[in-house]
Length: 101
Image 1 (cartoon, rainbow, N blue to C red):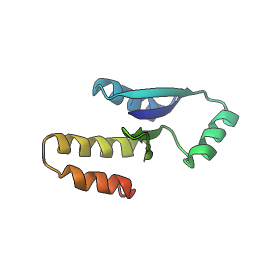
Image 2: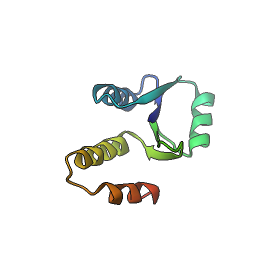
Image 3: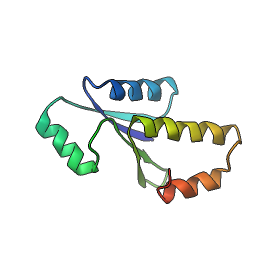
């Protein structure tokens, strides 16, 4: 499942949410208001300076940081390639676990 922290009024956040919905990916959206104190808390907590802030949780409940919008697109491209058997699934999991993706 992907957890998406989406900043209200942010085009990239809106686009990320639309992609998750259109691809029917299991996800949870947490809307972050345009409030500097709240935004800064998420930035510190997740060690990310921009929005959206996206995370993947596997079946063992281990969470991996995907990153932002561009990272989401990159990640989904790999998933599509795995589904079409263009890439080796074990290799991709190795990359994700070693934070190479």
